[in-house]
Image 1 (cartoon, rainbow, N blue to C red):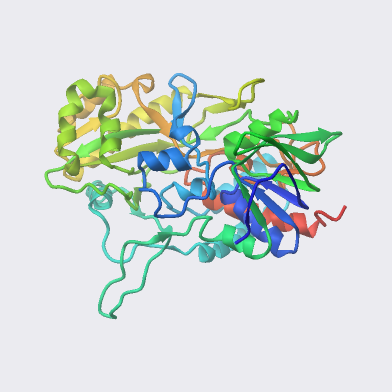
Image 2 (image 1 turned 60 degrees about the vertical axis):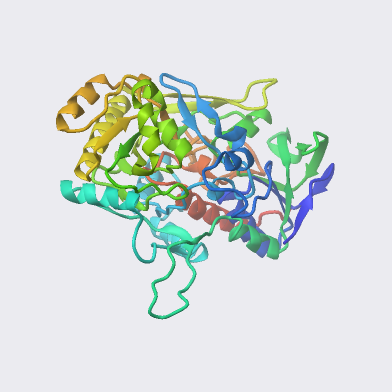
Amino acid sequence: MSMQRATATMDADVLIVGTGAGGATTAAILAEAGLDVLLVEEGDWVEQGAVVPFSLDQMDRQYRSGGVTVALGMPSIAYTEGCCAGGGTEVNSGLYWRPPGELLARWREQFDISDFDPDDLLAIADEVEADISVSTVPGGHTSPSEVLRRGADALGWRNGEIPRWMKYPPSKLASEPRSAVGERQSMTRTYLPRAMKAGARLALRCRVDRLVTNAGSARSAVTTLGDGSRGEITFRDVFVCGGAIQSPALLQRSGIRGHIGRTLAVHPTVKLAARFADALNVPDDVPVHQVKEFAPHLSFGGSASNPGLVALALLDQWATFKHAITQWRNISVYYAAITSEGRGRVRSLPGLKDPLVTYGLTHRDRELLRSGLGRLALLMLEAGATDVYPSFKGAPVVRNRRDLATMQGAFTAARASVMTVHLCSTVPMGEIEGKCGADSFGRVHGCRNIYVNDASLLPTAPGVNPQASVMAVAIRNARRFLDAGGCRG
């Protein structure tokens, strides 16, 4: 693989900023077409298995700012960003949702996206699923996952296993089931090696501070290298793929405004910890079942539940919940996620390395979080939980249905630990310049050779994990770039 040390001067036909679901797929398509591609990544390459999943070590080495980032608001919403080779694909749960066809059609109509055929996108999704080995878990599921299935079945709510991008080793004997312990097929296992095999170069620990623009074009980028020194990259075309926070921030630092960073969309999430009579905690994995009875507006799933994360789920009401931590092996953490009507903003401010991120929930969002947490607690009781600990200040322990009314009466979004791992829509794609930051294929409006190709382009939050949508859209756009004669002049 062609990894290189970032140097003071570098050049390429195509510069790709960021190596996550958008950047890695873009690089593979363009490099395989014979273009000279340079990927730059602010973080490091961290081999799978080198850090314990969901540990502080992983937070330090693979997340931006150690995972402590927040969108200010009432309430503020904590969010996470990957900052390593492979981006968010290295740190998320690997659960895969292909883009819903009806959502793609709605985006096409509402944002006037040209040549945006849902069938074409879903055909690309077929390719992606083969490339990253999307499959279900062989054999049985973990106890935390079975909790979701059991509770949903008892209530008659729609639920099912969500496949993941995993490869599972074959059995040594034909009579044995395959191992349920797999290897995540993230970008460092799939599209990045594929891109580098085709000749793409990867420079690590290289931050792009700004693009040098003139009359709607950019021919160079100013960088900061890992040792703090400054550098420059020259190129013909640039694809900004830093994610829904960093991509608009880079464009703004480069003097590109337009409809950039104004419409951040997320899936706000509230959590609880549920205790059961028997041990069920799985510290290094997440449940593969989700409950979609109320989708796309509201969904339920399971979170990572190592002892530290269990303690974090109890923290808002630590005075009365702290005794439960001694029984963490009997506890697992679950979430309720909503599709928000609210929106946020990303603003790059002079003198600050990181952008200011804000988010505003609507009244409907707040009420949906309230009802979502109540339904999630009910789901846990139906699954056999003996005690449910909602994650908000002033929360009571929920042990029966009577306690649910008390809990919902005490809940306000301002008291809750609201968080999200899905961020998108800060440079929405489409031909309506009044509400779109890029055209139908990711070229930034008003620019000739600056493209965005990541979650920023998704016009709205999709209601499911967005990375499958990101990969399908990125591959579509990269192929269009080639068809249109990218890098020929």
